[in-house]
Length: 162
Image: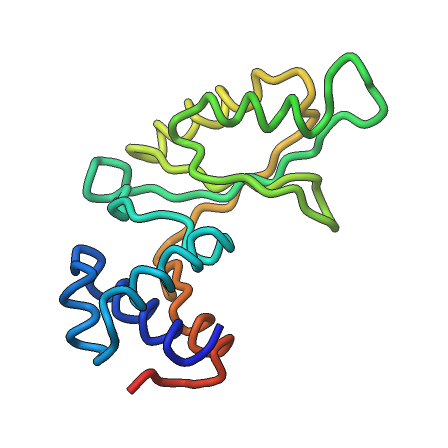
């Protein structure tokens, strides 16, 4: 990534509905250059999507929690992490899951309509026989929302894309 890629990412992260022609005008580079760089960033896996970012709170899921799952070890018939991940993928309230090191084997970020509904989500997660135990931490407030633009700026060697 160079500074032009960084400026392009910054622009589309700020205004995702902006067109290629307008981006080329604002950045002072040819439309073909903008399109070629976007194509390159997509094919390299740097840009992973163009869809809208949704707010779970705004669609009725104001409770966020993090589950630490302990997965049954050494049982080939259970499928281990893959079976647990497949199970979690079928639960709409599971937003993401990661295999981890340390205490526990997997983290899952989940949302719920209320604390009582969170119990329902946890119970649903625990229907997977490969999960031995779970602990839950409820998020009280978002201090830093998910973000990647500062990382893109750092990767491009700049703290700002003027």
